[in-house]
Amino acid sequence: MDLELLFKENKEQKLFGRYITLAEVEPLLLQLNTNNQLKKVGESVLGKPIYSYTIGRGKTKIYLWSQMHGNEGTTTKALFDFFNVLHSKSEFANALLEKFTFCALPLLNPDGAEAYTRVNANEVDLNRDSQNLTQPESRILRAVFEDFKPDYCFNLHDQRTIFGAGTAGKPATTSFLAPSFNEERDINESRLKAIEVIVAINDVLQKFIPGQVGRFDDSFNINCIGDTFQNLNVPTILFEAGHYTDDYLREETRKFIFFALIASFSYLNENDLVSDAIDKYLNISQNNVVFYDFIFKNIKINYDGIEIITNFAAQYKEELIDNQIVFNAYFSQIGNLENKFGHFEYDGKGAKYSDDFGDFPRIDEMANFKLNDTIIFVNGLIKS
Image 1 (cartoon, rainbow, N blue to C red):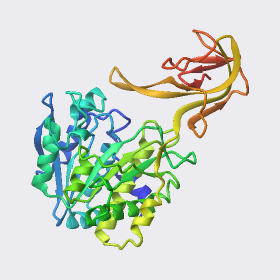
Image 2 (cartoon, rainbow, N blue to C red):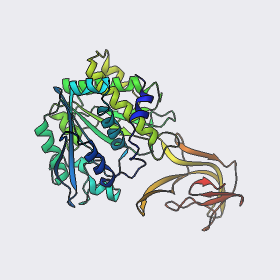
Image 3 (cartoon, helix red, strand yellow):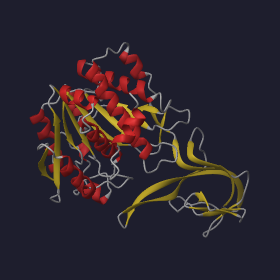
Image 4 (cartoon, helix red, strand yellow):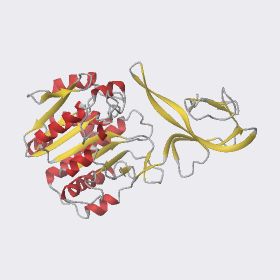
């Protein structure tokens, strides 16, 4: 199967960038509602509709949800790309619809999506509310789970640019996890099924992004939805969409998440055997916090009247301004950056730092500065 061509043919062009809200998603769901697949299953804190989209006639039931965290829309884009595949009337689509029934909540947290925040309108992280179920969105997710009775769960998220796959300086463009079901992180039949899916995904993605697939931390927290569903003996796979070089809008990462979805369902459809699945899973590089968005090396600064050569880092903050996501770079670390990497790196070779406030960078100030009064940096990047 030509995954690149499949993505190109089915990419949902009406979804783009980082700011994915109900205003973009709802018309697409209505358009895809060709046979009463769409159902309003509840409302958010602020009264916005939350939809389920159910399609297929197969015995194996797949439950997917995206944007539990409102500012994590990459997987939502990939999910709609996959919906387009299911509507393509291709031989592959018909095989999937015959094998599976898919039930998706494409935008679980519409209030958080509009505000571009991780939390919901009550400032609750829904991924820490799976036991107490204090929020309407959490209760909806659980109610659909209990009604649908899935065979597999797909928990779709984004992760920050700080993560690398291992410690060798490659970004974790995608990461996956078969969540633990107990404190001991044991592997039972249910968790093993999730592991086997991830191994199948990794086999595919390594052909496209070698060394850029990570394995997320599996510390047990029953308040997290993946751990809860795994604890209820339903194989659950966490997807984390991360950073690809120069892809802050996550359009390339979107493609790789799409590939991962296709790989998952191809594997489950074909019932392939995965040998040594646990070893292969554990050989996927662990996610590590090793990246900054910017690292500036060997810069001369004046600190308390003493000139020193040092390094400093900056990190983007994603800020919602006039319904647009703006990436503003702020200084975040000065000094020892050993074993750290930057998605953008610059070696000053002893050049002297200056900005509008003095001769050294200050934490949480915007990364606007000069080197030797001639090289100008605006928002972390060299001004052309």
